[in-house]
Image (cartoon, rainbow, N blue to C red):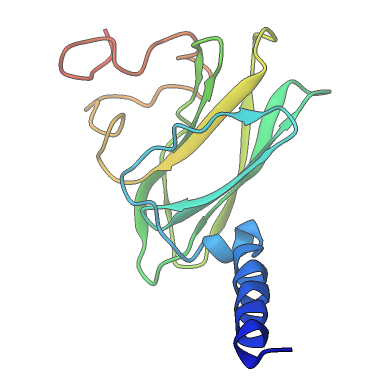
Length: 159
């Protein structure tokens, strides 16, 4: 066999093995402020880091709820960490009650869905005074906003 073909085959095998890394290997990249537009099926697992918060979430069909954890992957306290789930029927679950997470701290997440007419979903953790953290008043419950659109008003606030 020609040595060039051997090098080419070895390169292809190496590339294929690197490309086949698990989702966990991808977590070293922080998605920052970007929200994922990829909808998951009801059997998929959300497992991503955003602004230092790693969210692992699954849908539990029997309990009609989203269950998982949010974890601080940084060396600093993350302020006002909360989680949202967006359903394919346009409804939004959450955000969960904001809370600070110390470095390495993990918190259980449970968001119940009152509706069942959805087949896809997406989720994300929020950190700090962003989207829902600047309401200036009392906290809203985990399920108070289901059915609200995230961008109802022109300024992005809920009406």
